Length: 141
Image (cartoon, rainbow, N blue to C red; front, side, top):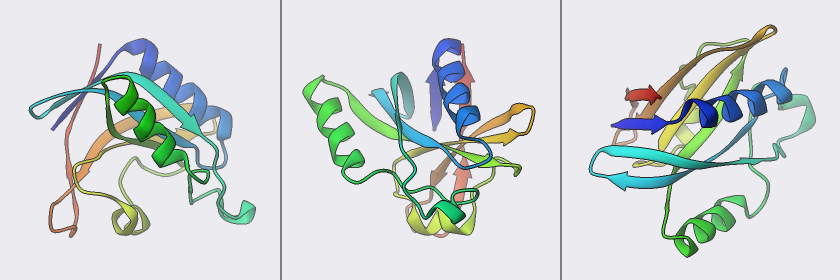
């Protein structure tokens, strides 16, 4: 899988995630699907409603966000491609919590955020048997 997004959209993603540091932040990726290539045309940040004391390493999207963004994408002839979130002070590698809560087909953009800002973004897709993630190609242009 390849995920393409403009430098401007990637900057919007990292700016949002830096603004939530030292807690996790996240949102949805919306755009177009062409075979194994997903092109992001919009991002939709959402609020982290996980228990406050756990937000430094857990993210839970606000109630109804998934359905709201999926409906928005459908109404605009777009596709809900996936999800982005941060790993504060941690590598951009999916955790076991990420694996258990992930959906097959979705693109998962994980950004490592350190005290001095976003460090690294990596793309992941859950295997169809849900056993692990495969890394995809992240193209920022």
